[in-house]
Amino acid sequence: MFRKLEDFVGGYGRLAESTGRLMGALTDENLSQPVADGHRTLGHVAWHVVTSVPEMMNRVGLGIASVNPESPPPSTAAEIRDAHEAVNAELIEKIRDAWTDETLERVDEMYGETWPRGLTLTILINHQIHHLGQMTVLLRQAGAEVPGIFGPSKEEWARYGMEAPPY
Image (cartoon, rainbow, N blue to C red):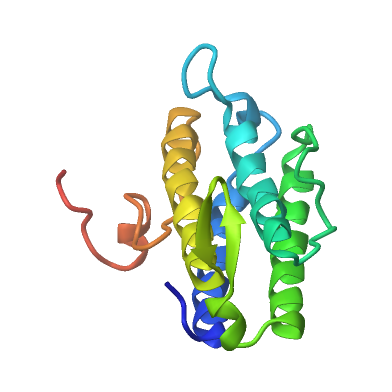
C-alpha cells in the first residue's frame, strides 16, 4: 500500500513507460489476436488497461475524463496508444492536484469492500501488471516482437550484447 504520493507517481510513471512500449507493439492487424475462441482479443485487453484507470480512479473521486471507461475498444492501435498516454497524464495531474500523503489513508467503498486509497493505487498497478502479462503472450502469438517490460525480452538480449537464457 502506498503511503507517499510521490512513491506512487514514480512507480506508476515507470509502469506507464513500460506499458507504452507494449502499446507501441500493437498494430491494427494484431488487435484481433484472441486469447482463445470466445475470449478477449489483444485489442480488448489493451483497451481494458486504458479504461481501468478512469473506471477505478473515478470511484475515488478523481473525475478522469480523457477516456470514457464504458467506451468500446477503438478500431486502431494508434487510438489505443493515444488514449493510454492521455489517461496516464491526466491521472498523475489529478492526483498531484487533489491528493496529499494524508489522502492515501482515506477509505472508499471499492467493489463491495473498503480500501484505503493507498491500497487502491497499489491494486491499480497490480491490475495493470496482470494484463501486461496477457498482452505479452498475445503479442507473441500474433508474431510481434515483444518489448521487455521488467527485464529484457528474448529479442532484446542480443541488443544488450548478451545471450538469451536457453529457457
